[in-house]
Length: 417
Ligand code: LLP
Image (spheres, rainbow, N blue to C red):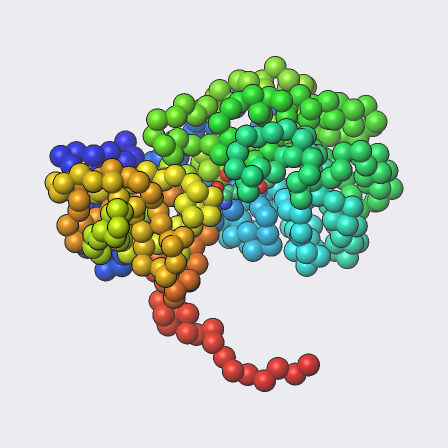
């Protein structure tokens, strides 16, 4: 088991979380369960059993090097969105030929690096195609490319994380497909190997993937009929997780079963899960600084904030909140807020919880994806440490940032222009 409570105490695998908090000087901290990460990977692996496929972990969700290495050792590939993610992927030992590089604004420098490493590059626009062509010419390599189709499917998610709409900033204009094919055909440096789409994130219905699959397979066959030797169909990522702890979210098996019938011979399916691979594998452990009431509102003030975890204030996202130890004070409805000087700084609103004592350990669940990686130094909060639990072992996988780290980047040097 990854996270569970016993006698009012929260455990991560074999370790009492309170025990960790008491022994570590920094707070808040991110704590990961290796078991949970590997179970999530296994769920995709089993779902794809018998289907030629690549499970391409979306590094953008969490690019901690140790986590990336564990997933690579388990058998995952990686999906990237920047040159720096390519560097992490290489450091983690992923096979570049199976790595996908997506993005609507890849720079020419990033593209040259990607082509040089031999990763699959996703063509997102007409200018992107020209830039990839240039990168191939400059590096004297052939770029294996995929085309990002826009299936125009409603993923029924928050508008900030919906990406598969016709009017989204991602992907090619499908009506221009013939132009792209002609350009690729006439470019000796480009080799079209597949198609890609990504519909959005936090998707809760397999029908969304199914609708997209029908459209994608139609394009796939059409392009093959035109003589292109397509191998990969990349359905992107997007499967949600049960943040609310009471919602039926489809499993990877249900997702794959819903599209299985559309698969055709000699096609390798790529999926790019981020959130469903790592989201529920981490908790943010904070300490209660104090409890206060203003007007009709009760607040639990903690040492974690929108600087460490921006999802609640950015997307109005729900993260489950509890305590790592028995808390027996009067039950009330609280907003859980941090010390940052603005009212957007909340991690939970209107939560019924027992009134905690000062220094009590408060936990925010499901913070493995898009949390640490979206943290900031706002109000000069330093990025927290990350720890990984493996059974009864606790491993620090990234130390806390310090003021010294921060100060080191200041300079006052005249620049020749
Ligand atoms: N592939 C591509 C091309 C993507 O753009 C994304 C995420 C993924 C795969 C992985 O999607 P996932 O399986 O994690 O849903 N910051 C937001 C999420 C943005 C996701 C963007 N794209 C959040 O905190 O909810």
